[in-house]
Image 1 (cartoon, one colour):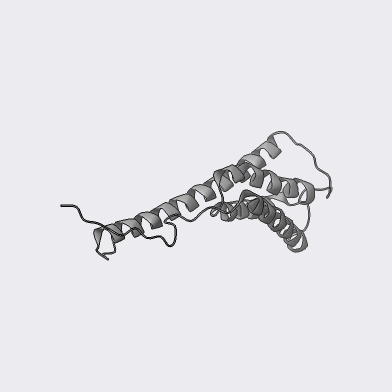
Image 2 (cartoon, one colour):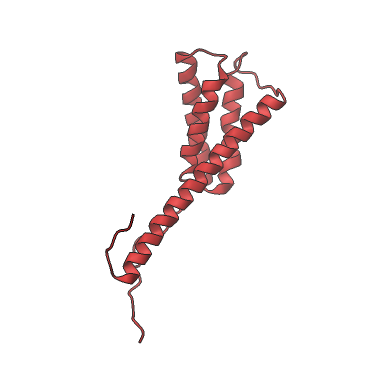
Length: 141
């Protein structure tokens, strides 16, 4: 016997990620604000707290972004980290291993945030679909 189940036409099961240009705009504005705040509180020339804060920003932005936004998010955060958290302020430089490490940290943070966001949305969609199709409202762990 075939059971007909109505398909919802309302909300999508998995939310669409935020457009990449909006993520990059938020990365630019957020990185500028974080570096300015850290320079005011901790003082310029201390990149470790700035790297940690910008990595957290990358994770948070990645939660609602597409995977293709991760490299751009990392580069934008790195530009503010390199340009304003390292003396002399306003001068971009490349210090080999240090900057490659910073870029790797920021890109990894953005990718981890994006993966976590996609998994969270997929899990929520799976729960909605399985509870709607099965007809039970049983909640698991």
